[in-house]
Length: 178
Image (tube, rainbow, N blue to C red):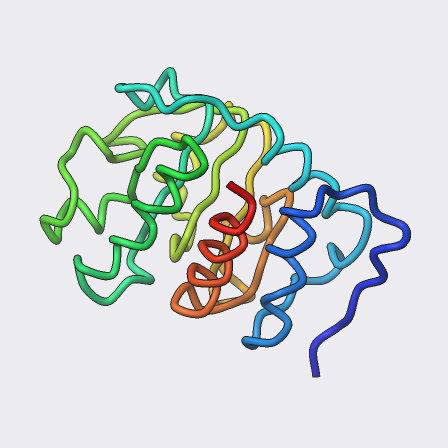
C-alpha cells in the first residue's frame, strides 16, 4: 500500500534514514513524486541544526504546529523534539486562537516572517497567510494527513501522515541519535 525506498542510492545520515524509514510501519508515505532522492534534502536540513533563538525571525531551525493537534497537551512531544534538535517552537494562527501558544510563536501575515535553515511543519495545512510568513525558509519538511494540503505542494520533503503517528517516530529516532 505504501511505497518502499532503496537507501543504497541515498547519502542520508543514519538519523534521517531512521526518521524516514520508520514511518512506513505507521501508515505514513512520502507524497509523489518525492519518494526518492529528495530525501537527501531532509538530511541536509537536519545536519544544519542550530541552537534555538529567542525570537523566531532569527531562528535557524523551527518546528511549527497547527490545527492537526487535538489538544494542548499533545504539543509536549513536539516541545521535546524541538529541544533535542535545537529548534524553536512556532505555530499557525489557529493554535494561537485556541490559546495553546502565545502570539510571539505565530508565523504568517498576522504573525512573524521567518527564514530558518529548515522548518518542520506538523499539522499545518498551509494557508496563504501562513505561507507568506515562510517565504525565506531554506528547507521545508511538512507533515499533513491531507495529500491535497497546500503546504505539501510547496514542501521540499512532503510527508502525508497523521502527526500522532509521525511525531513519536521522529522523537524516538532523534532520541536514539543524541
